[in-house]
Image (cartoon, rainbow, N blue to C red; front, side, top):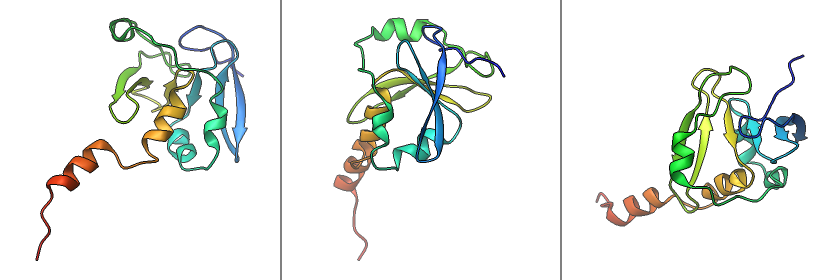
Length: 132
C-alpha cells in the first residue's frame, strides 16, 4: 500500500476515523486529506470538528496562490479554492479524484461556515420579494 504524504510538508498521512468515516491527517502539520465526499459528510456530523487538531496559521495569500500543491493520491496539481463566508479560507481540491486538502484549522472553519446561513443567502433574503 502506498504511503500517503502531506501535500504541504511531506509528512506522513495517517488514517483517523470519525463515525465510520476515514480521513488522513498529517503527523507533522495536522492538515487533513478528505477523499471526494468525506468533507461533505463530516461537516454534517456533530462533533466532527474534533478531528481538526491544528490551528490555522496566518499564511500570506500571495504565497498560497503561487505555490503548487499536489494531490497525495494522483500527484496532480490541485486547484486552489477560496471559501468566502463567515471564515474565509483557502483550500485545495484535486481535479481528478475530487479529494480536498485542508490545512490545520481549516476544516473547523469550513464546517462552521455551514453551521449558519451563508452571507450570499442572507443578502439574497434581504433583497427577495415575496409573491402574493
